[in-house]
Image (tube, rainbow, N blue to C red; front, side):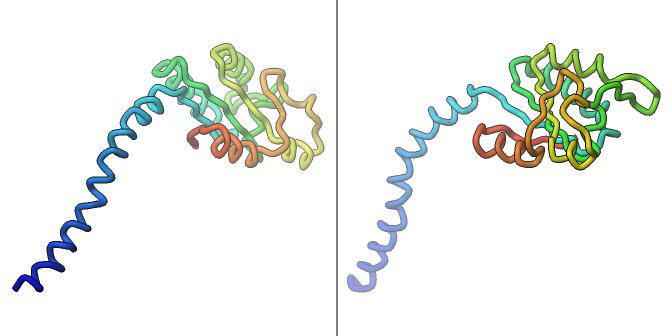
Length: 155
């Protein structure tokens, strides 16, 4: 009987052993989680279709209203760059410039893919002054997520 119980007791002790060792780590993780929660909120909005630009900018405006200290970067490529080109207008003929400038004043960064510009035979001067040209839109999104801790949103 003791021979049967000994392996059983050993198994129970070993099974509970990781929990004992995990308890201090979980306790140590609590301050780290609190620090992470207090860290800067950083969000990259991905736009690859300019027909969604107005909706995306309204989302961003709502985001800033709810989280005024959030760091927001809008990265565009493909058809998404269209609303950031000089003199760009929506389907109603209204310029995007005022809305983009207003968001820029609130700290939003707009970035345009140079690969898309080159593919369309446009240079950096085709982009409105409130936007910055980056080498690659998709690479910029990846870099922001992997190296700077941004979360990804696609309106």
